[in-house]
Length: 254
Image 1 (cartoon, one colour):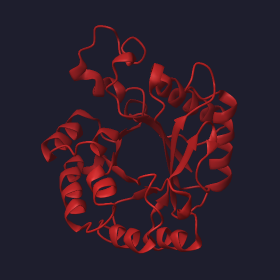
Image 2 (cartoon, one colour; image 1 turned 30 degrees about the vertical axis):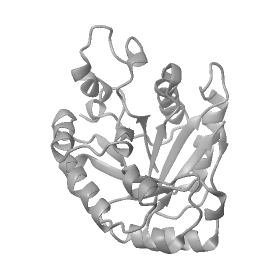
Image 3 (cartoon, helix red, strand yellow; image 1 turned 120 degrees about the vertical axis):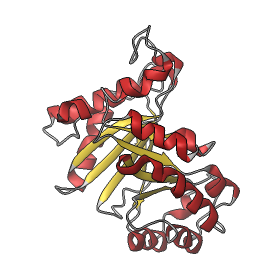
């Protein structure tokens, strides 16, 4: 198992003085971010899909070995609600291809009001290139069925293991030979920070579920008070302490 740990997004003003030096221009924040983490999740793509040129610029600004996960546009997941996926998937992938070898997993976060639709999910997953890793984060309890699990397994898509308030909000199904974990809100003080014991518990879950050789992508989405920066760093440090394989930052890999 190799752990890739990072945050959801990198452009947050309250990170100045925490991750970014006070005088560092915003235009250099991504470059600074890559000195601390091996991966980032582009959560802004959910709200507005960037142009291919923007994805190309991110590839040019990040060093070899850095991994960029991309959240699928809400147009596919929340407006279309997985229906007629051919055009939005093609548009997403044609633009994200600008990342080249920096492109990591693509996340489909489904609306909390979308009930289980295994046939729609299967048809949507079929539209993605087989070479692209897809993670799916359903948020309605009707999705937790053997039929849905079979769809994910048949397409090699990972069920996103989501955490809310330091507890799994999803089943811990292993549906692919790689994993994807999202941390939304911890219970420690100040909220929404995750405590170290909670992080240790998650590392144990991952280590005991994933065999050697599998990648696990873990992203912290608990942004207020720069909590995700502190937790992503702590998660990585605890993994090192537990002697778990951690993907190095590009600078460390040199």
